[in-house]
Image (cartoon, rainbow, N blue to C red):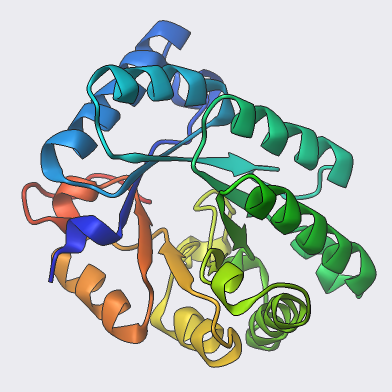
Length: 247
């Protein structure tokens, strides 16, 4: 099993969150990118403001690593127009994959029309520009019933509005890794959560993000049916170092 081919090596902290300077953050992002090149990691997942930097770095090295970024991160409650503008800017800067945070708070309030509109317009924008689109549902913020229901809603919308070929590029993703859970409860991918997603996603592919910290855990997620794993401990998942990260 080539675990590296499943990985989105991730760094999503802003300088204000990490205590690093802007120049230090850029160095870290480029180091992550070089690490992905060196170890055959599928993609790097970074903030939108670093897409152009990473695109230039990869192009100079003729590297095949994909660039992903997050949209509406991390609460997912930004207005749709703001999310679409953020996505379009990332597209213009050369991104390959868009990981939107769905407005899960509105889903929990029963505002299914808003969530549906966001999914359809955000997905359409990505697909029309040849991008992979992933929708983060933030399972730590949802009950089991809500995990199943939101995943099923996105699957139903995708079935009704996008072709089978297009649906191969529309993922449902578990987590941001930034949601604050009480009492140290998991805020990322869990076996229970991924299983519920798998049962309700239809033919949409799945991405497990957060909480996968070892080769054994990565293999377990792949065996559950995920085709991508988001991690800030990519080398640990490849068995090359110990994980020191919570994501």
